[in-house]
Image 1 (cartoon, rainbow, N blue to C red):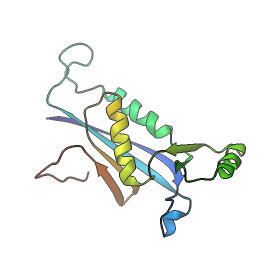
Image 2 (cartoon, helix red, strand yellow):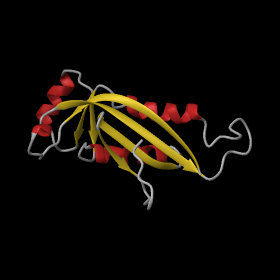
Image 3 (cartoon, rainbow, N blue to C red):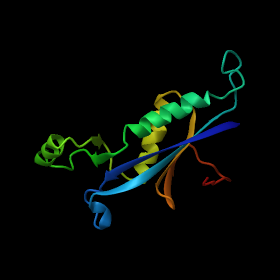
Length: 149
């Protein structure tokens, strides 16, 4: 199997609605996202001959996703009152609404799916919300290997 990995970072704020504890309040993270792709075959023809994919394309596509969330307030839909959203919008704040609770676990699946939608053979997505804490998402079980890179 051939594998590639690329990484991107973004800074954003979020909160966990319905959570009892510090994370129920708006707070920020420097999120670090790692995407691993995998294939048994390399390209046989053209400019990408001998490559799984062009690293430049892989890095650009992950970077675009990360940039779309950079310096934003990420919130779960239906967790902020319409008046609050209106006030934040009037102030010109950049908001990103997501259909899930914005946890590291859910972000790992989100990035997995988004990169998969772009046509990449994604093996795993890992999202760090701090340098020491991360969550990973993959579709298949790995019986003997659990690697946190």
